[in-house]
Length: 323
Image (cartoon, rainbow, N blue to C red; front, side, top):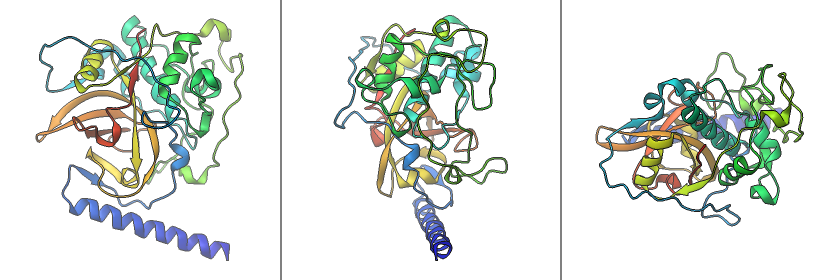
């Protein structure tokens, strides 16, 4: 009976996916939907948003500049020595660690831009495991957390080095294996086939490498939020990558390419990513963001989203810090 039930459930999800993608594509909107079946991927979300109770608030930073901004900008192009880090789409696997990735990666990019050192890769695992409790906005590891609190954590506690899953050279590489996020991958198993992972244990020992944990810490100087479109743009140009979060609806699961804007489907949760630039395509303004669902998803691991109208809250949840 259970086999029949799950088979029927899979067929229903597949049918719903086709129906949603066909509907979106029939609208001739600014993005293209894929016809993958819908799954419950809320376990891979997990970012508290600025309008929700318990949000960890940072002080605002405002720019007084009035000079004209360029029509397009890309952190990877503007800071070519750090382009590999900036453009790399890491993989959070089947864990709600987007908040740790979005914050840690943006800090990593800014460290590279500030120092010129592109050899350091910071550890989302360290942030995920240790940034918790009242000092980190009550973030709960794989059950979700707060990028704003993580940025404050980088000021007070720092973060160690840590590469992707399988790395055996850095202090704390990522704990969980890569998986296929809503794609037909040849090399990766689907995330739905993996267990929902528990948060790694926080400890002060390096798993790999020849450096002691306390000696491998990197710190930010400060942390802040950005509240206007122009402030976000100016900060990207001056310091590099920022962290943001937005409301995820079912239709985002079907995203394939183009400039995303919510069209249909129910709200699923908050999701954190890093933002690396902006542009205009056929008169449509957009932000460029790097997801943590590896480079097989979306536009080589990235997506574009409507700019200027706070689409899905993308402009209401931007945080950053200096190095």
